[in-house]
Length: 195
Image (cartoon, rainbow, N blue to C red):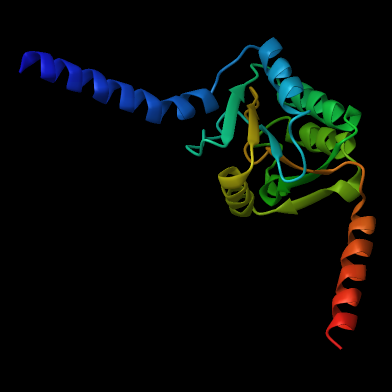
């Protein structure tokens, strides 16, 4: 009886480990060198529909196994510039950037440095690649993306609310204009086929 209980206990421990292992692997805390290594190792694997988020220090860790969170232990602006540089240097993806609309209403007197941070964000990405959406919508998009695609969160030491930058990766060698052209041609062909 004791031998059977011992074996059952081992079996339960193994089952718990198997269930928890993906969650443990998707949430890591790293040094400033390792976050760069992680980004450089993930970026070649990522494609359109993957996301990279540069987040402030209070951003939550998601429970979705597809969402990986790492701590950079570095300031927001330097992490953002590094991430933007890595994406720009890649040939296979480009970034479409979303900001929390609320950042526009955070005041300098309440969070010193927010004006400089907004300026840094604005000069890091081309204006036509940046959109502002409510924070709740950004959170929903990330949660939804994490169910099917990989999302990498890089938490910084930043302490300004609503400063997170959400970068949705898109195909780097096809512009939105070409994508629209292909879609329009397909629609026209469908209409001709149905006549």
